[in-house]
Length: 252
Length: 254
Image 1: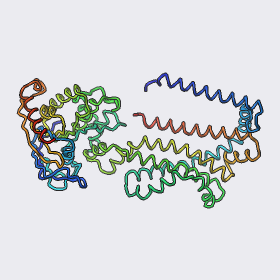
Image 2 (image 1 turned 90 degrees about the vertical axis):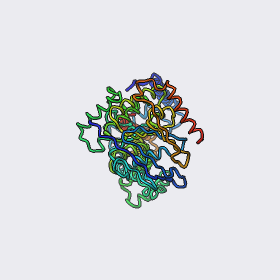
Image 3 (image 1 turned 30 degrees about the horizontal axis):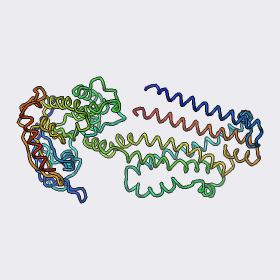
Image 4 (image 1 turned 60 degrees about the vertical axis):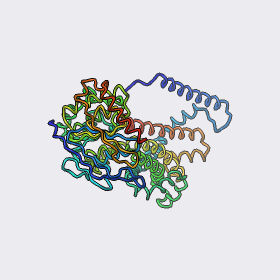
């Protein structure tokens, strides 16, 4: 692959400068004691380290990540399967299109109480919320990928005698792969949102529960420490998804 | 890779409509075994539809197409198609693209690799086996498309405006290579084009289709001597006269 153009590393440097600038400003505001809601960033870092050392963060994060996996993996598998079916078969598309579009734009947090009613106040609700948040964007992107397959590629394969199975496996599936991977990348970001929303609403386990707890008890420094952890998880998962994407689609 | 003997094509009263649009009306056409025939006509005259009907990609509403001794009801093993937009798999290397037809026809991997490599060599792309389509120019991509079509040793080569999106200099070199390959392994060729020079330069016979609905308007024999790729046929008075004759037919249709 080509080395990145000079401009890209300049952007990297500019981004870094922005982050450092923000941290310095935050620290200064915290030291000036403008508000109890702006503790110095160094205090947040200390609190983060303490929560990590005493096991609070690890316990909460492992519960959160377990729910994330339990919700996202089925959403990915089922989402891709449903998206492929909707892309390939008009009947399936007509049946599901309205539902998928409605639920993709709906404020899904409103449905979490329904999940609580179904599953009770348990961590299953978090996994179900993760599923609900990430499923639809995966479906829609996969379907779009299949439908965007070049017509001439399909005709070319048919000329060489491809049947339905060969068309699917050798044309539609690889042609849909980039859009599918985009759906999974967007899906994993949605999944992290679903994780936090679900945990905050059941207020029982995970990082979301800690957010509610520290918020209600005005432990603002600890609250920020948990927020930073959530941001880190979001960043790392989306980076991992991007790495997987690049590894799978090297021909672009 | 012994090239099988070319076969004739018979088009018998073929009609085709897409909804309310009548694309082809009662087309009668005979392509001799080993003949190089061009279909030309104004945009929307159904020439591509006719080609796809020959390929078995578009079923005719009425009439029938016979390739060799097979009545066409779907794609058959004797035909290969070269597409206007190349239709290369962007995720596969040149080698894998050229192997693709062989793969779909169940040719074992080792044989596939060798046959594809020879086809790549024939079209002048040796050394580019591991490149991806996006790394090649349009002309080179279409050479991959031609190699893929030739790799399955077809008796009939159907070409849908193969040079339309290729620049003029590349196109002329490519046309000469096509003529050389065609003289080496005789195939029945049907070429759809909108270039009068191209039709005259390459073909034994040019069939002019009328605008929608497409009918056979006129046929024009091209008695220019072969091989044309070694002589400077384009510079001859005969060539100019034939192109002019074709233009006079087409002008009346506009």
